[in-house]
Structures are given as C-alpha cells and as structure tokens.
Length: 287
Image (cartoon, rainbow, N blue to C red; front, side, top):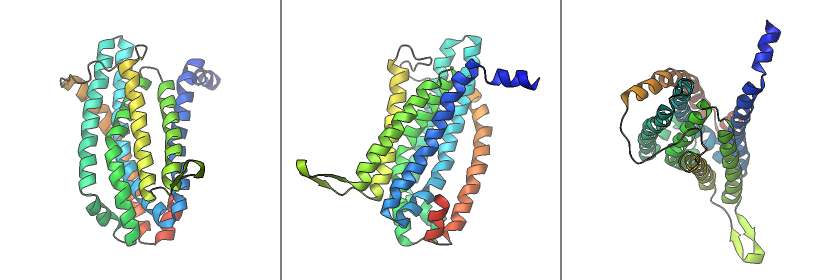
C-alpha cells in the first residue's frame, strides 16, 4: 500500500504541478536571503532595520497569501465542475477584495509608519528606527502589487498552471538582484561619465518594491492579454460584487489567515524582544 501511495505521489501529473511550486517557493526564500546579503554592505544598522520591518511584512504578506489560497481552492472547484465562467469571475472577485485590503493596510502603514516603528521597536537605536521607517514606507507602497501577484499566481495554480507563477517569480528575483545591486552599491562607468553612489537603505527598499511591481505587471499581462491563459481577467475595470464567490474565498482564506497570523505574530513578538538586546543581536537573528 505504501509503495502504491508513493507511486501515486510521484506520478507525472503530480510532479508537473509540484516541481514548479517547489522552485517558486525556493526562489521566494532566496529573495530574502539575497536582500540580506546586499543590505549587509550598508552596515549592521541597515540589516537590523530590514530584519525588523520584515517581521511586520511577513504577517501582511501571509494575509494576502492566505486569501490567495481561498482563490486557488475555489478556482480548482470550478475547474473540476467545468464552470469556466465562474473560474474567471473568481479571479476578478479575489483580486478586488485582496487588493482593496492591501491598499487600506498599505495606506495606514505608510501614514503611521513612525508610530508603528516606535510602538514595536522603541528599544532600537535611533538610526535603526530611522532606517526602519524608510524601509516600511517603501514596503507599504508595494503591498497592493504583492497582493495582485499572489492572487493571480494562486488562481493559476488552482487551474493547473504552476509554471507561469514560477517563471514570474524567477524574473522578479532577477529584477530584484539587478536593481538592488545598482541602487545599493551604485553604478560606476567612467567611460560614460557615470559616477553614482547608490541610494543606501532607500535602494534596498525601492528595489524590492519595483521588483514586486514587475512581478504584478507580468502576472496581470498574462491573465489579461494572453488568450491561452487558463484563467483570464476579462473587463478588469467593470466589477460587480458577487457575495457567493466572495463568501467561498473568505471561508477558506480566513482560517488560513488566522493560522499564519499566529505563526508570524509569534515571530514578530520574538523580534520585538530581540530588539532590546542590541544591534548585533538583531542582525544575527535576521541572518
């Protein structure tokens, strides 16, 4: 029985879906590691600020990802029932709700960024708090882009397409590395008369925000303009609230959101505790 089960789990159909997802998730984790490595050139204070704010970002990104899980499951259900029109409508409904939530949260985090940093990381050095405010402001602006990307990728997975999200994530990572390298370290091309020293902590945050915008743009382009896409976004500017689909998405997404909130909330509490131990402790914990 175990042998038959293993054979079923490693079947070509399962691997066709699973391998791209594994690669995609690995790329997402690698993105955080690469950002930490590049930020290390700016000193402990910059790395500490990035690590502290990422504890907040992880909670919000997990919220968007949880709603995307609801979209994935509902899309898969409609695909199984052959109701293609509901598949496309689920994507539109999920995008509307998740992006709306992301815009509200992003706006609040941007406006009250100083208060949030002071409330959570008041024990940190002033330079760390200053860098954290900068990083949080750029992160808040990118929340809607992150929501667009995770919802579309989730709907595509529910329709059986895990390769497109993997490709989008790969291109986003490449863009993040290139932009991050230039915006953090600067660009020195004496032959062309270019001597630019970079943007420091602004470069770390801006490169991530731009990379997420690139990822969201590629995902939107795929579902809007590619006729062969398994899930399409028709007439994106015309929207009518569908209580049935919204209820289905949130019924699945909310329990997952609570689970992720408890997990990442614990990590945030740990981060707040570590901040009181000093800059070296914060930096070590992030790495």
